[in-house]
Length: 275
Image (spheres, helix red, strand yellow):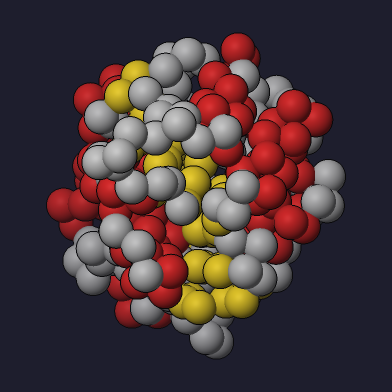
């Protein structure tokens, strides 16, 4: 049971890919789903904090909607609480166009925005997008130009290794203003509004729930989790996390393949301290 001087955890958020979903898998294990329900039964809000758009989360959870009624999607740009969208951030078109102009100078690099589940490629090839993220590339279309309205989800894809992806990230950070970028995985970059991250979405959820950061627990593995991991005192990076994620996190735990996160969720649901 929690000690008398500790507050109970009321919100659990976890990254998906590489944190609760092993690489190469497309659906969460029953054990992971059961851990979510244990938390829900204990009166704890729980859900994913993912770079994926909200409309792409359901299949990962086998359409078990109770597990994603509360979530941060698109790196905190879509914030849901009990099934209600309480915040939606969008990418301004002017810096988006400037980003496209910079990327046109590079080989093997592209950018796409999403309208619903479909990716529209503003620059680059469908083959390169498919290599970086097969699920997006298979149904992608070539865009005629910038979208009419500012989009929520925008990604940059890079043909090359992690070092090459990092080079593209650093170039964009130096050349484009009014927009943010982060690196969740090799060959792929997220695009965000400036100074907005998963941590921003957590603050918004805390405000709506009337809780403090000391009542939140988060898990992650990648560089798009850095702000979240640094911001929340009860944060943990899995063993397979990037070096930056491990540095940002306040705690280190076992790997995604060992089911480290579901194990800790179960402990929290039972009223125990996670770390």
